[in-house]
Length: 190
Image 1 (cartoon, rainbow, N blue to C red):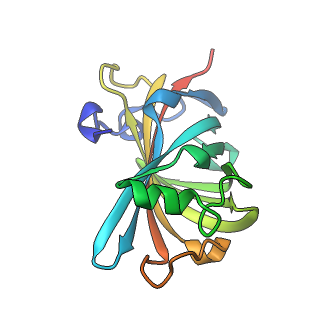
Image 2 (image 1 turned 90 degrees about the horizontal axis):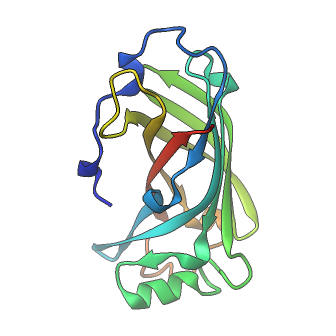
């Protein structure tokens, strides 16, 4: 999915303070959301995507500590940039999707700074839970009016080490660090 499809006018900088005083619930636009990843295979990157099966999102634009995110990622439907990599990734030495078809993420804390946020949370992969930190940027979606928070795009970036989760297959050929680029489109509930 190309980011050019989105209108990148930062939401938070355009909205008056005090517009919303409590967490606002959002619904995931599943078809327009995905986890993108990149890992090195020797000198070449392997890229791929994972669908987001479900998510619960509540954002309090005034009090970040009231915000929360939880998500289920459909690991079993992950795709890599070439078939062999997909097969290896889904297999027992990496994601082990026969035993662990999903991954989960739950936020523990959010810290806003202008139009960005730092999201601290726990990622569970292969039955192993580890803390992760993601950088988030919030945008209004294309076609929305200035100040409209009903349809938003959130771009999250970060990295995890696959060895932290026991996903060590082919570690002599494939890098340990996985770069994440997660695009989430959400619509205000109700």
